[in-house]
Amino acid sequence: MKRVKRLLVILLTGVLLFSMSTFAYAKSMNLEAVIAEEKLQKAYENVNNYAYANGVPLDLSLDTFIEEFKASHATDITEYENTYYRILTARQTAILPNSSGGGKWYYNTGTALPRSANYSKYKLLDSVKKGDIIYESKGGFGITGHTAIVEGKYYSSTYQQYYIRVVEAITDGVVRSVLDDTRVDEKDTVVLRVKGATDTIIANAVNFCVGQLGKGYMIDFQKNTSASEPDWYCSELNWAGYYNQGIDIETTGLYNEPGITPRDINNSSKVSNVPFK
Image 1: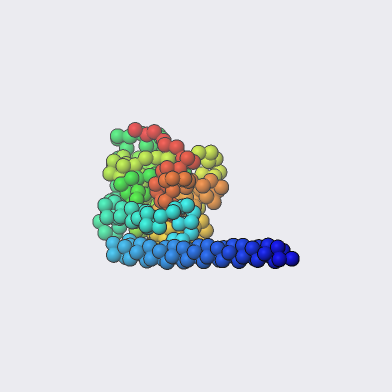
Image 2 (image 1 turned 90 degrees about the vertical axis):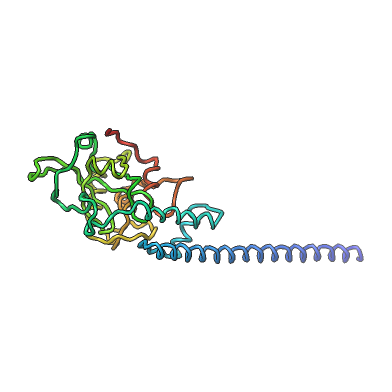
């Protein structure tokens, strides 16, 4: 009997110690989660303050900030925060000028060619097709680089020439613009073609972007795909156009950034470079 009692005491002691250890571990994990949440919230506030101080039109929710952190599989909150600074800092050196403020002529041109376009240097007119994505490493407002989607090739009776028209989200909002050799040189442009996109997919992707003309420009890092979205940033609009047709042109893995950045599209395995030089 004494031996049984002794075994019961040992067993109960073990259970008690295990329970205490489990409780301590759970409490520790819960504390770590609280600390991580507080750090994420502080990082979110820092990013918003930085955007405000530098005049970047950012509308970033805390939920989106946390969701993107989890999706990125990042382990260092400080490094994740720094990712936003690297993206937003582009605004300092590669801002897309507002066309109403004396910007480049090829922005926000509408459906009429405002002046003769330059196609003397490259083979853009022969190489670029409807639905191609234009990536500009020296373009962008708020997000490093810039993207636009090719609406098609059009003819100007005024200047007796064909020209390439694109749809893009810039500070003026979602507008029509022109791509020519001059813009290629000034913005360090490459042309990307979406792999496996049929004529129907391309037409629908372009029509989606055309349907957003006139809407506002805003960076929010959300991955919006709805046609009723009130505002867009450049790469989000182009990505949504194809995403709604079943093709996700966002990159995955190591080089993925918060939201849908132009670099995400440029680095995607779903696009290929179109030679035109």
